[in-house]
Image (cartoon, rainbow, N blue to C red; front, top):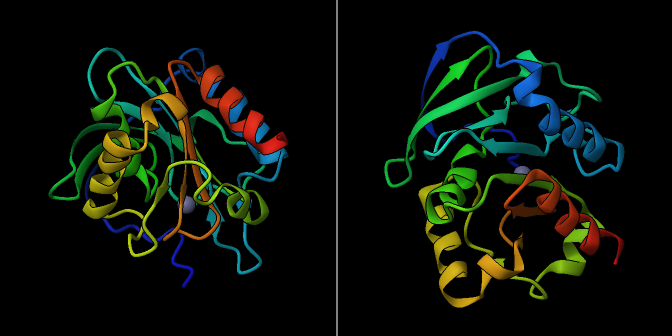
Amino acid sequence: MLDEGVIKYEGVWERGEPLSEEVLGGLMLWRDRLYGLGLIGAYENGIGFGNVSQRLGDGDGFVISGTQTGHLPHLEANQYTRVCEFDLGANRLRCCGPVQASSESLTHGAIYQRCPEVRGIFHVHHGQFWRRLLHRVPTTGAEVPYGTPQMAEEMFRLFEEEHLAQVRILAMAGHEDGVISFGESLDEAGAVLLRWFKG
Ligand SMILES: [Zn+2]
C-alpha cells in the first residue's frame, strides 16, 4: 500500500518566518541535488516523496523540508520549517515556520534524539536502490509503517542490534522504496548515500 505523504503525527504548527538562506544553504543544495538524481520526486499519482533535515544548534530541534514538496525541482527557503519540539512516544511535534513539517519528521527526530553527533539526515525513495539495500544494510521490519511511534522504536532496535550508528544507512521494508542516510554533517550523510547508490 502506498500511503506516502499522509501526516500521521499530531502536530501543532505555528506560522513563522523562514530561516535565512545562510542557515539553509547547504541543506538546499543537497535537497536539489537529490531531486536531480531522482531520489526525491513524485510518483505518477502526483504524491511527492523524499525529505531532508539538519539539526539546529545543540538541542534535538531540526529544520526539515515541508510536507508535499517532493515534486518540486527546487525548494525556496520558505518551504523548510523548524521542528522545535517532539515526543516520539506520543507521535507529536510542534513546528514553527512557513509550512508544515514533513510527514516523516518523527523518523528524523528519532535519529537526532538517539545520536547527538548526527547533524544531517536524508530520506529518499528509489525502487531499484531500495531492493538492492533490503537486508544488506540495517532494515526496518516489513510490518512497521512510516511516521509512527513503532518506526521510532524500530530505529532504536537497529541501533542496538544492527550497528546502525556505524553503517549510517538503512532501508525501510515496510515503507516501499524508502531509504535513510545520516551523518555528522550534511556532506557525510550525502556521501554515505551516494556511495551505496552508485555502488
Ligand atoms: Zn518516505
